[in-house]
Image 1 (cartoon, rainbow, N blue to C red):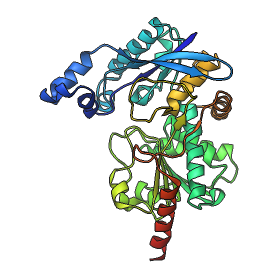
Image 2 (cartoon, rainbow, N blue to C red; image 1 turned 120 degrees about the vertical axis):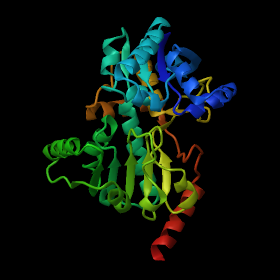
Image 3 (cartoon, helix red, strand yellow; image 1 turned 60 degrees about the vertical axis):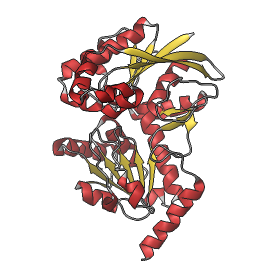
Image 4 (tube, rainbow, N blue to C red; image 1 turned 45 degrees about the vertical axis):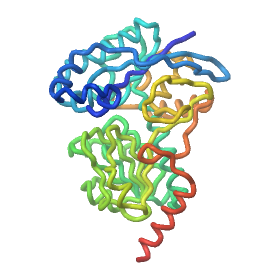
Length: 358
């Protein structure tokens, strides 16, 4: 049976404390030093991954650095840790390894990792993009937002996910606003979009202004801090938060009952799949990046698929079709780590109408 692996890591130091409570007695700086020295470790075996066409098995392998450490430590050190984890996957028989969270963000988005291991590597970004945009579109329809007329803001537009989201969306929505830290990269992205799409309605905007005007926000930044706050959103807005750590502040859930925030890229996996590890989702669900790794293993596509900053639009479309073939599909909706019902969405919609009136 073909095998795959997927790399995970603690997002915050609190994740260490939640899994290993005894560490709370140790000062954070020592926990940080311990984590830097820890080797990669197999967290769980993933079983029961079956479609009508094939079956496979996998492993979660932990790369023990937090998001903050991945950003602050020297790049070569981060590469070394990720490569070590990927080589463990290779040693254990995996033919493809997926890079989760910041293991897919640092440096050149997986290119260097792929050059230093003997198996295929993917970031999962192609299916993440597909699932996020499908989810945003479905949520907008439920909130009675006309997709073809919608004003959409992409936060983190110059990243490997954000840039493809922007290039896809410009052909579907009424107006597109782009937000990112690097102005030169934004200018380059706009030039690319205008060459690809004649008459593209795309603008570079100030972050706050772009948020407040948007009917839909696709949030894909690689920031360690929250980027979207209650005062930034207009009534009835939809926010699809793909970022990890999250771009949307928890204050939005507490203070704004008239906006719909959904988690991007939540996927129903084939029945019978067992992850044997709690990563915050109910049984039978995964992140889209995890799902992409499983889909490629089921398809026997043991090739480096989603790598680098320039994800191909055709690969986004292709992985969407392969997902359907093997029984992966977009979940309902989750918001701030819980399922959100159609009744709750209707309440949000009604609250937004009241807010607009008064």
